[in-house]
Image 1 (tube, rainbow over the protein chains, first blue to last red):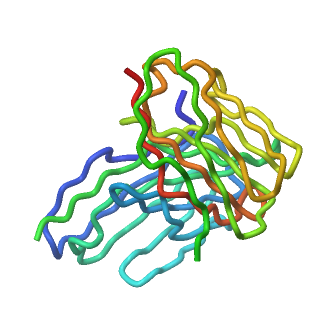
Image 2 (cartoon, each protein chain N blue to C red):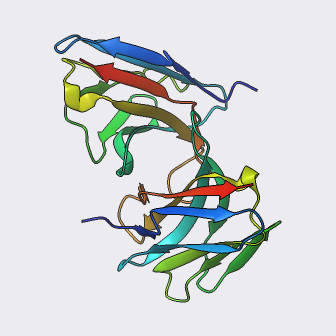
Length: 112
Length: 113
């Protein structure tokens, strides 16, 4: 059973379009992170959200943590070819050992 | 700015051979971990360490050993390589567990034939 479900799995869009990727779970998380991974490299942290309902913006990227802290979304405005990559969400479950679990990722391709 | 350094970058092994993937970090991080990344599977935790002398199993530990004799180094050993261990391996470090930023190495591509 996958703790974190990311959708869509693949997304191919044209430059200038907007897009949203989702990260969902039935579990409540104490925090959630979004990473971006380019081919041949390791993931790089984009943002950490910790409060239900929290919205963070990073230039053209907007991250939202659900009110119940079970889901999150990443919205990209006016996508550019440089946004191409694998977007991974990762979350820490409440209680327990605070291990980070990753979703399977959304592979985004932005065509010029 | 070395960060997390993994070696080798690429390796081909024959079934049954053993090898060690090296990982070193220069950020004085207590927490280090190893992940494998397979197509359609995301990142899965193999082993992790919360400090020198302390290691624990992650989600997929079978066939792998680790040790943490120093804060800086966290090698991953494949005892008897199997084709199912063909994957990309990432070492990572952070100040602690949970919501802290995880810094990943560049990855090690391992093929077992």
